[in-house]
Amino acid sequence: MRVLGGGPSLRSTGLCLLIDKNVEMTHTINTYDLRGMVRLNYIAEFLQDYLICKPDVVVMEGYAMGIKGGRVFDIGEMGYSYKRILYKAGIETYIVAPTSMKKFVTGKGNAKKEAIQSSLLTTWDIDIQYEDEADACGLALFGYYMKHKRMQRTLKPNQVDALKEYELLR
Image (cartoon, rainbow, N blue to C red; front, side, top):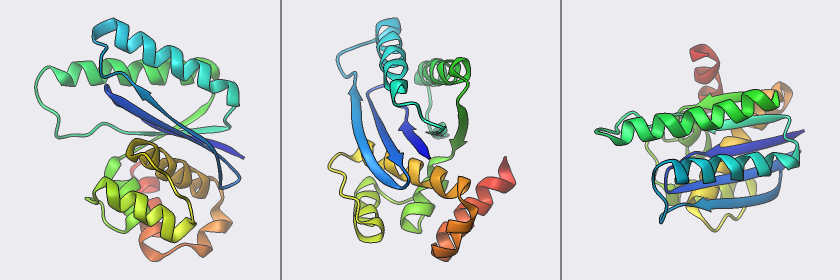
């Protein structure tokens, strides 16, 4: 099974493709120097091109609820761009709250990015250099275990709890 994890961001979007729990590739879409429709179009086109890897499932990070001001609209537009591309491609998509992914990977829903990288290494022997790609890898693993119920027997209680919470909220 091919699971693509993605942490959409206006500045630095991480992507990670898992094939049967193995990291096949990771990438970061950097848009620090872009603004407005140019940035949204760049992100959308990059995601569209990335779908050549033919994921069976995409697990996307949900919106951070603490965002205030005009950026809320920019983030909403970016989220729409992602969802539209995935919908048109007919790819099964799950939206996972950042706290659920963090709890799944680290045991704490408010974990820092460094803790995600550390937990990926110690728990799954996955060494991801960049923080946004580590988030995407956590999302992809979340999706892998969501789709493979039998494999959940090998998980820690916090990981099972995070998956159950997601299922209850869907």
